[in-house]
Image (cartoon, rainbow, N blue to C red; front, side, top):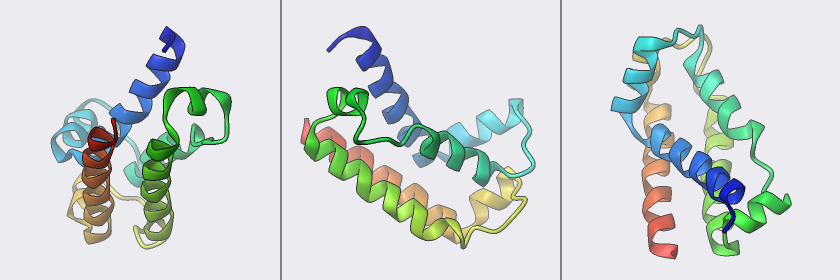
Length: 115
């Protein structure tokens, strides 16, 4: 895997790890203020979610893309339930966000088992 592809893969898997981690989200929020953390995190994921693209196909196996697709669909399903203008404390106390975080944890485990 070339360096660009490897860096892309790391950026995607690191983001799943970030979404799975309350600690990483809180640490980030200490340094960066947003009016709505849920919207910002959503943009981070979906801005680069192009599983049909060549870089995605080089960075992930078809099984891994399927795993990431399940995570993506879960997030899309629950996103409308999150609400507006969520501080980091509000977001992390939100049961819907907890479901998304839980799916991120399961996604990391599935990716680790797929390789």
